[in-house]
Length: 595
Image 1: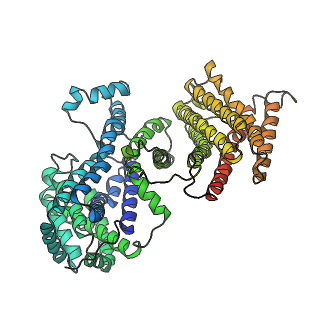
Image 2 (image 1 turned 90 degrees about the vertical axis):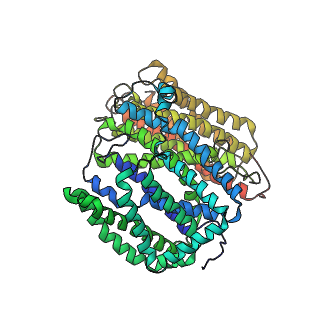
């Protein structure tokens, strides 16, 4: 038996495959919004052809993920005792499972219950129902978190094997012989075909741990295969050698499988021909992916991979809740299917990534979102918190713009020349919550950015008074935005938004604070031009000169110009200051800490 010692606890190719597979999972769930299947929520558009199209990834995607998860556990256990491996696994899986079950999943199930007409109460009412005697008698739904449940249980089986090295050695020796040469394709195919023929008709796939016999033979089998075989280079050499053959088999099997699924006669002969083609496609695709990945991605590391590997678990936890909420809000707009699907994909990935960017910076909640706790020995870079707050300032205008664009897209006939932006959140808007929610969050981000601006001025100039005034102006503006979104136009309390207009003096405050800083000449010019532009627009829009220039026929256009400058300059200034703080931090020793 040939086995090379593991020099690393990671494999770049398996990391890339895992990231890509989870990305496909998110796209697959967006597809289910339009597919003729019973899913949590659906679009107004349904396409029957998706019944066959989902077979492009359905047979192999989750099986591949279980295989890679088993391999990752074995690599992780290389330098750990079985007890330490079990503890680390529990610390990584149990907090997000409990958190997701108590909060993330109930949001999905509440919307589903309302959408399908089975419930009409509030979210709090649903929590009481779900975790009360009636709800608990039917079990607690875990929705997409079933994968974590299975991984946790399968990890117990794998750790049990770690406690018996002799048994593991016998199993590995048998598997090495069983998958030698061409058998690396044929033996796994045969296994998958047999369990599909024998067990699938009895169990189907339930994603319920207590009654999911076929899925356990499939997923636990894949998990243990990856766990036992990841270190054996002969296996990987065989997969690389047969990768083209596997890809060709998969290309032939896929259309046959689609025809069988579409044709009424596809289930003849007790479904055995269909099960055979399914199993062939299942392993052929997995073998091809593993073979090509091993061949070309083992050395493909870098910051992008490290970022995605760290973010993947959080994205997995967040994505389905984000998607279900997005469908619920966007569907009433009756957008064309391509536009709606594009919006759902963008929102699901974008909001999930935003959640990751937020939670990774908050040590207390990192474990709840599948992130490892920050080690005590980690040295926080100088100005790290200030730079993070300025990054929030960069994101705030983008969020506000996104809320406006989506609000306009869901408001048929919205007149940019005559209507104010606030009307996107008013009673006449089809989906006011999109605009108002975006403005509310942007207001909170504005307050955080104000703290960042104030601390940045102090960090660069040590001038506390102007730093405090700058932060105060932004905080008041953020309060105005948040309050105005809670009381949509034409509620008189909506005029709290006028607090946000105080932000037009912020460029002057920044100029005052940075005046003595010789390295920011371009930023100073930009701030001066911004202030002058806002002053000119204020004079015109308040009819102080040339009355009639701004009138009901064009007031919306003037407001757009004012809003773009009023909000947009914040992102640019935050970007420049964040870069400047980075340069300043790089000049100091890594041990020179600052909040």
